[in-house]
Length: 597
Image 1: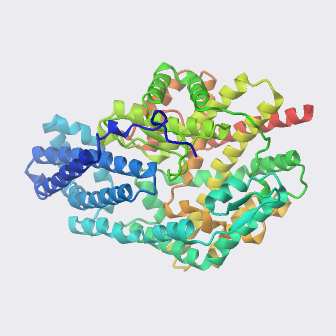
Image 2: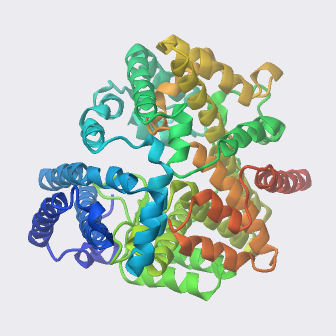
């Protein structure tokens, strides 16, 4: 862990000068919440009341995002500090009150109807800013309940998060993680962080030991994890039925008007191209020199590299990689690098992992990193600053009400940046060993982002359909379903990768199953990014500007439609075929390089 240096830390004073200013903002938010209640029952009086209420709601919500972001990022600087943990909890309670206070808005807009809303917009031009939001509310009219029912649904959030919270507590805090000693004498705590690090240990027996010891803990609590996941699925089914949807998937997709054919096409294309995944596993076995590929063999790097990338070099590489996007994109990121939009290094108590926060609309995006001077860190840097570019361009181009873009397009920006980085690294790399390192890293990223997430998506759909069909699910049922999937995806029956029965319980380890049809968007996004990157790097006419327009659009349209406008239809097979072409080209080059050695 490095010692904190303010030059490598984000500057949260760009949001609030201090915690007193933050507290004052929360007080103002509460006053705004009280003011919102005065508009209940007034929309029928004319467009002025509707506009005034919407503008107040936007002002309060924008400040709520700002206050919540400040509190969470202060807490993430050092999660051992009780004061900042309390700030995050306080902001969450105020956000719940805001949600409850504004719960009348959608039912009253629905009561007006489309004709009246159109007449209001014609009479008051300032309402034009809210047209997409208003039309979306009206579109979802059949799934919106009365004001009192909406208030109850909003308040239900206080209890319906219990399965997810309980999972997090058991998985991260209470599970009895063992100490493990590797063959070289390395001793470590085999929690989730330890597993992520040492599952790629160079010694094969060490890897098997790590895998078996780690999943033995999940096995010991399998029935409990099964109960929590079953409760989570029932929660999703409850919300879909309360809102009168035909299924949980339909309810989840309809929030952004994503066609169900996108989900169906993803699963179909993943299964149609399992031969590409199996080719990758056979190539991996060949490069590792193993004839009996096992599940604990899929994480070690295909080629080990001792390359070092200090943060300034990492920034330089990311900026160079973005040259195909033009000067505006590069200048935006260079500004962020210079102006302390990022918290760079790991420290004791700092939140692990990486993320981008783009919700401080009037300020700028923030990026949390735990940079380790390796290529994985550079790839993560490119990923998160792809998100930052998206938020920066959106916030510059869109009114706040249209700035909150969907995850469905968010991961396109991040994974496209990773593709541009790989292109940049291969352009300058002449050493076969270096090229193998970068190609192997990219191939593993694509395997994990597309095929693994598609497998998760198929599992998530299956368990929701079982519960919607009136079936109860136990841990054994989850394991049976997941075991069939993991063996099919990894070619177990054909001797591609041997999947021991203990790994059928891997579903218990995956936190994303508590996110309600979330993971499929990683897979669709990497397919869209591969297609767009192919177009941009081939200098296809208008491709770069169409992509930047996608980022500028934010949430001003439905995400599927925005991607179609940018040239990508995820309900059709072509983006997925582009991704398969990309994986095929990488494997072709790897095979050529190892043949020459």
